[in-house]
Image (tube, rainbow, N blue to C red; front, side, top):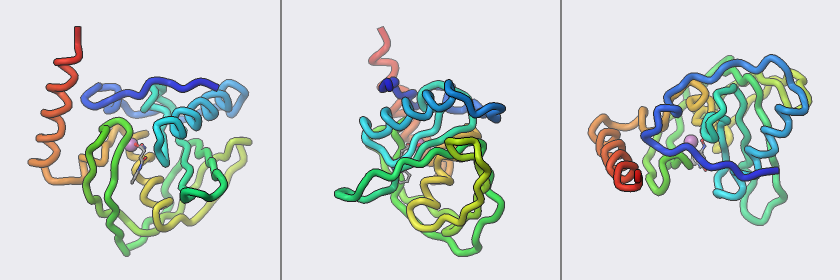
Length: 171
Ligand code: GNR
Ligand code: NI
């Protein structure tokens, strides 16, 4: 297992749409394990493959609370079948936009179809933090970031700040 470097805003890779996965094989399982290790190391509660530069439709999540046993979950080719009318608001962050947080409103409950780590189709209802995190990660698969759900003024300020930081770090 390997910790991979994270892709950070404003890298255009984050705006790429990820491609469906055709085969759940050993190579894909190794990628899932690397994603989990990278997520736990960060630390974060979710990670999409594109955040380590791999444009494939897979994400990992662990929303277990501190002190609870680990609950690593792998979602391959996830699709939202249904979203609730009810909304919920969470303060979100993103490993690709370090140290920036903002409230985002999303559907409170989503019904999801996906393949698990063994390539088996699953359909589940998710609510609470899991629902928010799944929607945040599925956005990544479509090149969408949580700052796309906040005001334009705030978004432009964040992008400007990260663009400046990237320029000052470039050699
Ligand atoms: O670690 C993360 N925390 C988080 C908090 C609220 C809503 C979404 C998230 S996902 C984020 C990790 C990440 O950037 N995943 O793409
Ligand atoms: Ni993110």
